[in-house]
Length: 218
Image 1 (cartoon, rainbow, N blue to C red):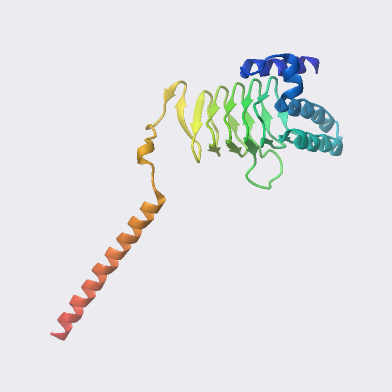
Image 2: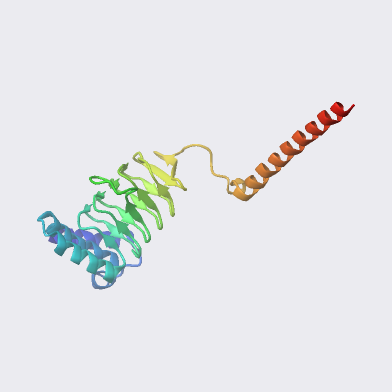
């Protein structure tokens, strides 16, 4: 337990250049408070004290704005930066040296029982607002971009961005075409273009019918 406490404090210094002293970290970092309360709640949860564990979890949520189900398994040196809005589901598993930013959800996609939340490998960074949803693994040393929605397995050493999430880099090499922000699809323009095509098709059909009727009169 005390080894975990020391390593959790060290994780703050390793990942946040704004951290100045242990006193400041211990008393002002809500992510650290949420992790410590979760470790207590998880120990009780494993012993079958489910209600007490949930009460501690709920108190932690109220105090920190971070919701971690007591059933979630968290490794060593997790760092939650800022933290507000972070949600970690019951069957989620998180490895060592993971960094999670504010607004991240590690959740499920349905109401099924059993394993339904993601497994996060070691040395993974999940940027602010990202959603990782479903029972699959995010490989070691991977990065999830801000506001991405990840719905399928991520290989190790990968960078994922977008909605839905797509791999843009793996093992240090770029994957696929580079995203050109000047040529992103515009759904309004696409809809107008489709409507114009429909109108042109109807005009052509109407013209054909008129010509056929004119021939019949002759």
